[in-house]
Amino acid sequence: MSEQAHAGAVGARPVPRPFAFHWGKGMVVEEASIETPYTEPTIQLLKYEDGSETVRFCYYHGPRFGRGPAMMDADALDDMREALKDAPRLQALLRRLTED
Image (tube, rainbow, N blue to C red; front, side, top):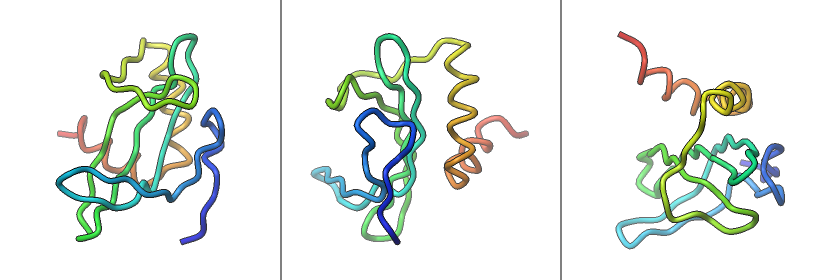
């Protein structure tokens, strides 16, 4: 998989890029983010070394990863919907949240 910078991200974070938790590690393989006046809400598709995938809702504040919850107002949701058009796997997974 070739590395490319995420176009909507402040500082253009590359995707894919590695992540590591104490329970496992892998790569951020897709990312959608938007800029708001206070933070950069971000949705990431994490792919672990064992092949499993997880969706992470997070935010950045400038170049720093935020440790709290990602929050978006109604206008930001519209912007995030647009950002997700460049992240088709994330978009498909998130669609499952609202389908019956």
